[in-house]
Image 1 (cartoon, rainbow, N blue to C red):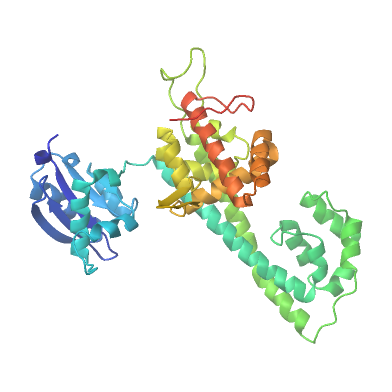
Image 2 (cartoon, one colour):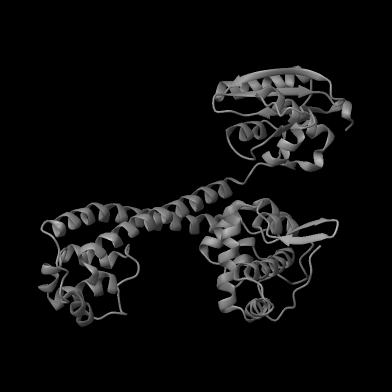
Length: 418
């Protein structure tokens, strides 16, 4: 396809309207319009791009946009346009080509994106429609993370109230959101009532919640400790505060369990790849989820994050892209006699957090990961730096396994990927 048969559009999206700038293959301006956000406005945008350019098909119009997701991207992809995304920081540098004074407006940004996509397509990332299962998995994975943060926040508030008037409960459980502890508090909401709680009632709660690390005798002994001497009304106020927190904690506990159940179901729905010529004779290729799960340190949360936040690099088995997205690829800054290597900050925060915990758990269960971590620490590297190197090796191993479709074998030597 020649440049004369190609058109370039830049979309500066906004909350109320979206500015679109359209050029031909030689950079000549064809038109510029704004479209209201909504189903009618986005449909009108697609019709205008086709009519203004005169393109026979939507695939001949390359569209540049800053965000790689959202209704604008989905509407354009659904209609067959070639959508490309660019990092806002790179977009800011391209803007300097058009203005030295640093002026910025929607029209100029749309023009900058269209022009930059025409002259520097290598700086953009081509977007493709995402598997609906992956879209759902991404949403439930993020929901589970948000709910976990909210549970920690409420549990910390609960801990503060127990410390204020009922410190005996803090000796029994580290997790203030544990269901058995909430049920125990409901049976004995104050130290005075806890001292009169029967051992049989405590044993029934422990049995119902399947708590085996504590006995009823140990729990009753902790509850019978002398209470704090407090000002009048403190116990009533604190216990009322706790009573308002417990229903919210229980609701979040149920929502987290439901989100985890949905995550497991969605991971199971990801279809295994069909047998391909890359598979060795007589060898069964495993699906990506099974391959990743076999790696040490990968469980539900890490697996869901990898599959949901990096589906394209995983499908391409793109080790360099995964290194950059997860933040384990270092950044070299060299100028004259100065030469330093620093941590990569331009990465996906959820992926960076996932591989951090992946490596942290892997050094506890995988001898090679543990040996690599120990060697880096011996050479003076920090804990985080050592874990990033361990994660780098694990990503290399994962890409090699995904290419061959085989499960993790701790005895298999790691080979560099291209």
